Image 1 (cartoon, helix red, strand yellow):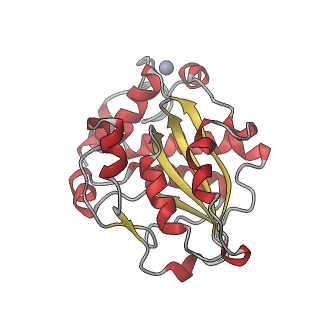
Image 2 (cartoon, rainbow, N blue to C red):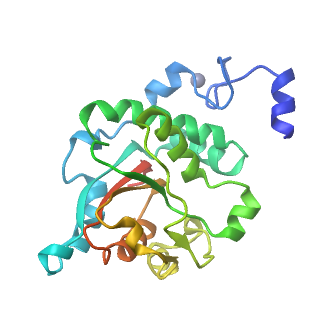
Length: 233
Ligand SMILES: [Zn+2]
């Protein structure tokens, strides 16, 4: 890859302030410290959880009731966070997504946020998009988290079957309908009695995650938690 050749000749720089840092695709300690934390890991009924709890309040038989366990975003989506996540997503810097996942997991693990989770599940992108970009940034967030948490990553159970316009280019209403029926789980038995953590980069309206959850809720005894690097509102 071109980027690894360039790395031989150029010093590694912080993504935000461009000061020298020890390794590529990272932030300096100062910029990392300044990113706005939400503290969602210790806040029940936080902004992210409130986006999804209604999906679990429908009457069901107790034995097949999927449970929403917890949800949260590591950062508030300000200009700095936006440029870091944009770089991770569009400038061929998957390692930066991994770095952020690792940092978030290190900060949240001590409070038990990831306790009893079985699988890390990145929100899938459509194969065509994957082909264009070369990687799914959410999968790289999971890879960084997995290094810290030692949890497996599942990219083959939840599938994206519809290629949809980019959510960031749509109004809120369009975002909601855009991702309807975009996901499918061909082998739901894989997740019986599992606790999965859905992982995304940015939550805005929550429409994408809601549609993933709708696919998952019919699965018997599957428990669901949500983690995102940032929340935009
Ligand atoms: Zn910096």
